[in-house]
Structure formats: C-alpha cells, structure tokens
Amino acid sequence: MKWYAGSDHAGLELKNELIAVLRDRGYEVEDLGTKDGASVDYPDYGKAVAERVVADGALGLLVCGTGNGIAMSANKVHGARAALATESFTARMARRHNDANILVFGGRVVGKGVASDALIAFSEAEFEGGRHKRRVDKLMALEG
Ligand code: RB5
Image (tube, protein in one colour):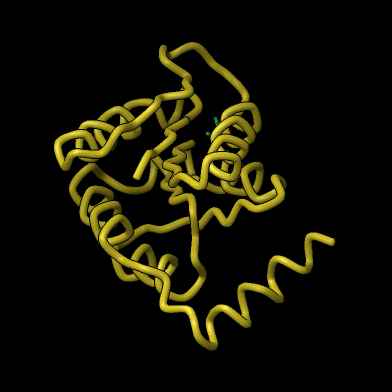
C-alpha cells in the first residue's frame, strides 16, 4: 500500500518520525511537504495529500499542530475520510468502522511513541464492511 504524507510546520517533526516508522515497515511513502520549518498554511497540505490518496486509492498521513485544521482541510476533498487520533484504539477503529483513508495527528498533542503505536494499529487494521459499509455509504452521500 502506498502512503502519502503531509504536514504544516507545526507537524513537520512528528510527520518525519512517522514516515520513518512506515518506511521501516516496508511501506512506500511519498512526502508532499512541507519539508522545512518555515511557516505554511495547513489547507495546502491537507488538500494535496487527500487528492492523491483519493486518486490513487492510497493511504494518507497528515500532521499539523492540533491535527484539526489539516483534518478539516482533507475532509473537504471528495472521497477523503480523514480521522484525527490521539491513541491506537481510535486509529484502529477509524479503519475498521469508518474506512478512514487518512490518519491525522496533532504534532503538539501526541509524542512519537503514542503516535507510532496508533499509526501501526491503523496500518494493520482492515475495514469490516457489512453494517459499517452502509453507514460509510451514507456518510459519503453527504458529499452530494
Ligand atoms: C499552526 O500554528 C497551527 O494553527 C496549525 O498547525 C494547526 O494546529 C491548525 O489546526
């Protein structure tokens, strides 16, 4: 499974750490930026990652300061289901029940250890389908 990653300046450090976690586990990861500490706008990176995830049927990793702004941005892209997580249970269930295709963290909220565990839980989980598919179908129909 291919991954796309993105962050603003506030999420840069954690994003880089989590990209290394994914690569260590054998995933191909394309980093769509930002790549230095200069102040940037999170919607640019949420949009870029979400568009590539949807177009390629890939998975995404996004990080900003709280995770909120970049998650909101990604979820404006049709087909994106970006889930903000602070621990592994939420991350795992975002895949199992919500068929999330993007996992989001706040780089000012969670540390590398907790975020790594959550990312691994997300990456190893699978959508359960069934009644959850009916609900995700209704969710996606809200996009119009
Ligand atoms: C940047 O200062 C900060 O506002 C941003 O990273 C994020 O937390 C917004 O939701």
